[in-house]
Length: 156
Ligand code: ZN
Ligand code: MN
Image 1 (cartoon, rainbow, N blue to C red):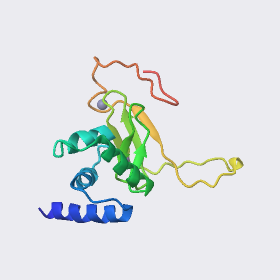
Image 2 (image 1 turned 180 degrees about the horizontal axis):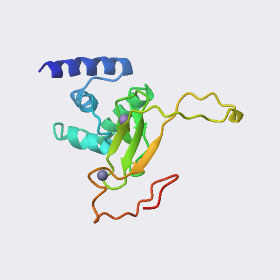
Image 3 (image 1 turned 45 degrees about the vertical axis):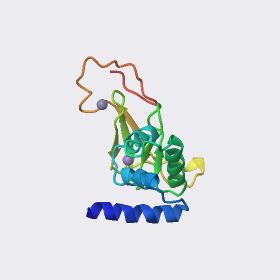
Image 4 (image 1 turned 90 degrees about the horizontal axis):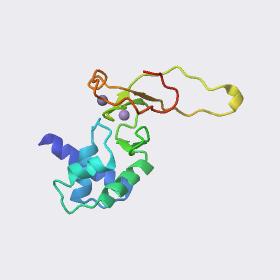
């Protein structure tokens, strides 16, 4: 109960800050995202929330996500080539994706990386994407190993 009340207050504050009308649907979207570490897609969010609000449109999900993203309240991840994934954890961190089940996990590690000064950039951040097979998928020998990932990959 307590958690629900807190989530509601938080949702109200966020809507106010974003200049969005606070609707039960929007509140449910915000509650679903709060503390969610699964990096859901818009469709995942719609699927979960529309069970409680069958009349809700996918457009409501999209415009709520866009507002949150534009205000820096939500990370939009492109690590999954099939669909954009969303992360309410906006602290700097990195990600890895399972090429089999598409699970996206966090990497809380500070990589010691430098960009050559000769490029002349002032670097403000980075985001590193890793590709591989999660603990549940790596030992499955039935899984097709066709998805090559992107960038530099190791031959399996
Ligand atoms: Zn997997
Ligand atoms: Mn994350």
